[in-house]
Length: 260
Ligand code: NAD
Image 1 (cartoon, helix red, strand yellow):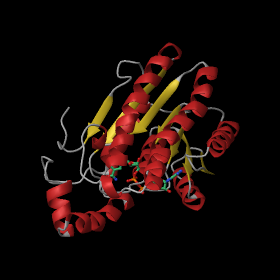
Image 2: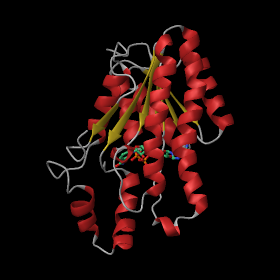
Image 3: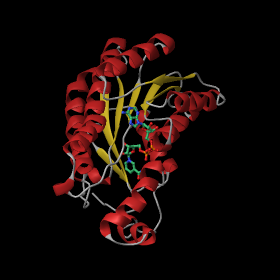
Image 4: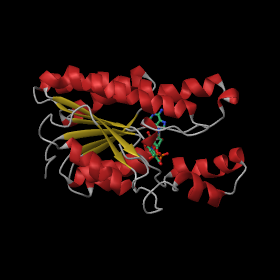
């Protein structure tokens, strides 16, 4: 039980990768805060997690709103006593070729992925410092933190940006025992990816099957999607890692698609 009695807040955890990370950390003993735009979904996941024998709560949070982020984190600390682990995971995907990328969509992508990571870090790290225990901050990056793909200018830019933020937080947090990491999954079959398959097929003029085989999985060693469980195991391991030995690093979880 490496996370026993710790409090972990996961953004975007009403679905997909975030949900699995929350469940995995609950299994390791953590009390869990599910922060999501989708409050009903967040509360449903919290209920599922309580059945594992830990405390859990859902909070409504748009990670692009400073007010909502601060309010959600304060509510979590008030109810559960601390924040020891932050998983900044909320994210969306919008794809267009650069020349057609609406500026509003570009700004929305950077706001969710980068402003969200910054605002949640800023609000949570104060509690990690003041508790005297430090903590772990894990950013959900992507293979696209290291690699580029057509149509994904905003996503690739934002996911690369998280590497910089994590390295600064690792340096600033070092003395106070706060560690920062980026976990970088390959393609995982979640609603975010299901939405992209027909969109990419249309933009690239190929079939959906070709998108899966030739675009998403062609460079993996086993032709399979990364699973939410693959990612959650790494997140939970890092959340409970006892020293600063790994801080500032990124961890690619991609079935060999991208090798650092
Ligand atoms: P998902 O669509 O299953 O879940 C995303 C969650 O984020 C949803 O519950 C949604 O309500 C929430 N969300 C969206 N905007 C939000 C906001 N502004 N504030 C708060 N919550 C918000 O997606 P997923 O595939 O689980 O993706 C989670 C993270 O993993 C994202 O950062 C994504 O970029 C990253 N990622 C996904 C894949 C993949 O293949 N699925 C690969 C690499 C990285």
